[in-house]
Length: 187
Image (cartoon, rainbow, N blue to C red; front, side, top):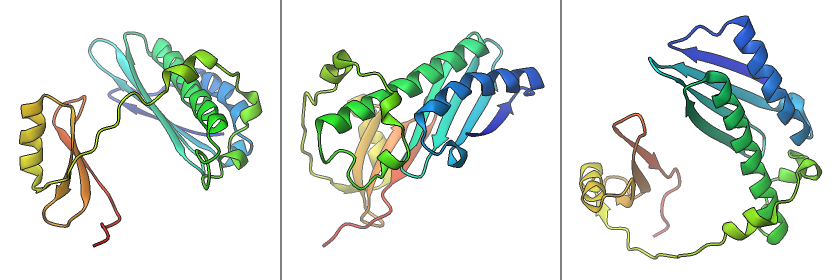
């Protein structure tokens, strides 16, 4: 695995870099061709505590987690545990459904035999509610207003300017963000 370790508000020393790479090294066993896997770790220091964002880029899919903790090294450990859990749940989901990983090529990227099955986690992943909504055309400002009025952390809407499905969301660090679909709706 190739590592890219970036610091924000902190200088990433050789000892921090070595420790993070050593801890991330235990993830190597989950990738078939780990030479083509990029792992980016962003370390952010605050007055009290730190945040670690780890993103693993593979050909088939990306894995990402973000953890805040008072101790940088504990945050790295917890982030790696969360990434392993994401991959384990993906394996379980793929084993339960023939179509879940179709077209993703995950078998060529992930070494699924190195994951331990957890049946308890598989039971907790059931879809418990399905909701159907009509996407009303609106502006971003209208979507944010409705999201705030509902008390939700995200809001799905149809952008009035370009007829694309969009999601407005509240960011953890404050402010709002928008995710826009690249493909247009068929008319």
